[in-house]
Length: 293
View 1 (tube, rainbow, N blue to C red):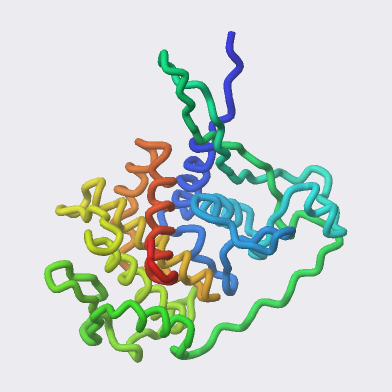
View 2: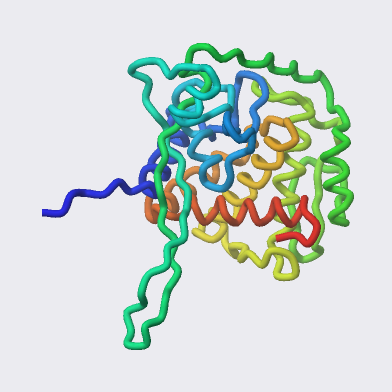
């Protein structure tokens, strides 16, 4: 008999589905936190942020375990940092892809390049002894201007209107509409600044969808899989941007409407969350890097 192989795609999808369901009926994703700001998960050794689906996997683990540092590393990396993983601590998993060259299945002796996923166990800073965490910043009481975020938005050239009680991207006019800044009063789990910028960046991620930008397909009907996936991409894009800018994303009032569709997509296809995370990362690169995605 063949020994069952560890399926990292299924493992991470299960993590995220569990995190979504964790609120016992209240819609909540890992980046919707009640305890201060979050950041994109960072590796303790390289000091670099994790990418793609690894961000989601570690946010999901943080939500389920009540972790908030965003700092992760392998057992060896923590040892090299002068810390010690506590006995009995359970590892989270991140995935890395490595290229391998293999002989093609033909008579010409061609060589094919294939990607193989490798799961790596990591531990959070809260799971080790001998490492001091920095103090978290205190949220502001009103919408503050974040220059780095404003610069990103301005550089896109996106048409953004203010007023009304809804936030949306309208493909027919290729424009974004938001309530005024003053309308963002925050919630029990977010400051007004977090509420404003997370909403703006969610809609700006939608703005990257058309063919002349990132060429993503938008769903034509509420509730279909394409619509649910695009909403997930937009939320992940906003979450990635907010994390990079030091902003915590905020629960949006319409999230509950999409919960069933999102869970359906994730449970039906174990690679769906990888696709959404990849598309969100493409959108972030389009918005923040010269030359875009």
